[in-house]
Every structure is written in C-alpha cells, then in structure tokens.
Image 1: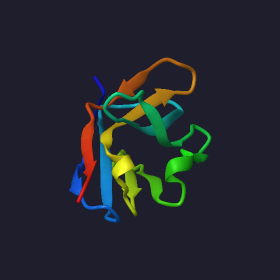
Image 2: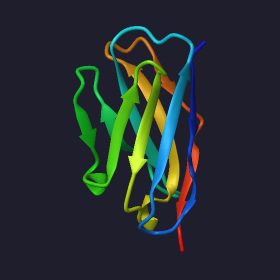
Image 3: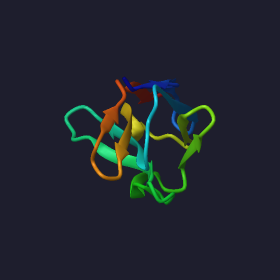
Length: 117
C-alpha cells in the first residue's frame, strides 16, 4: 500500500519561505508524474508544479520564479521550495503521484500553508 505524506506547512509572513516535503512509503513502480497541487477555500484544486515522467518541470504561471520542485530518488521524497510567499499562496497543498499509463493515482492528505502578517 502506497502512502504519500506531506510535511513542512505552516504560518509564514509575506515574503517568507517554506519547503514542503512529500515522502512516499511503499513501492511505486513505473514512470510517473510527481506533482504539487493546492486548494484555497472556495476554489478548485490547481496544479502548482510537477515533474513529468519524462523529467520536464512545469509550473503554474503564478509561482514561476518563486517555487522550485525537486526530487530525492534515494529518499523517494519530492520537495517544493517556496520563496517570496504571498497571501494568495495560502491553501492546502497536496502531493500526487500519477502513473504515465493510468494504473495508479496517489494523493497525500494535504498540508496547510498560510501566508499572513
């Protein structure tokens, strides 16, 4: 059974930084996309950043230049480094692992990020 566990959320002032982690337990086989999503109150869940099965990195326009997604394959952990945080970044952040061919689609439980002075 695969589980994705996010950590690193919290309260930060505007302009601050946070690093989110998504640790995967269990074996995940095959090429997959590793993604970070977020959902703010009253809004739909949206893609923030991803590393595709082919290794490309994609970012939402709103976070380009501020957020960086990375992976430690030894630890099987995906990170989201968030800099220059803004109140609009306040949301619950979720990580996701989706297989290239649709055989699995795992989500974490989410971690709250609040940007406020």
